[in-house]
Length: 113
Length: 114
Image 1 (tube, each protein chain N blue to C red):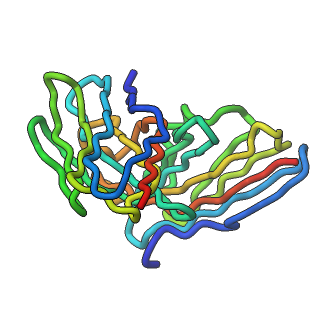
Image 2: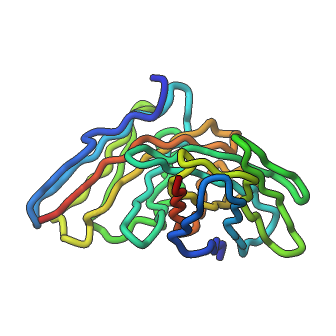
């Protein structure tokens, strides 16, 4: 596609439920990133994929968070047993493997009630 | 580890004022430096970048110079417009090529009043 596409754009879920957030990167971009943007906390790196593998999972905040990428394209970020502190905007981004310009989607706004 | 510190906001200016948003960084090696902008209701967009010391990035009237001696990458614009109201993020790459992600500052909310 023309840009990084994320869905849903907004999600309200009850505490304890699982949620899945989807990211469709720019065509041809093999590098894919997930960030979390919380009010007053700036941008927090979560995970990075090169192709289908994730060499750096250091940013995932707990074992309730997981991410996968299939076919070197679409990625899914899953949050299990959501907590109120998980409420944030989850941003996906992609880039060429050798490039240093990262392009962001518009984010998925998650609210846990 | 790597970190980015930028001035706290909100920063409120009148139209046509001179803008400076300070950004300093801590990093090993030779990172690339970036400014991203987030307009209301939109995603992050790359505003400008610099990949080595003394490089100047520029776009849309904004400029920033990579100063290794002061580990800074301050954003400047000579005459701001209402349409520049947004949140600005300073960032650096984890490695020189930036292929494995960025470290961001907390963002500076800029408000331009007519």
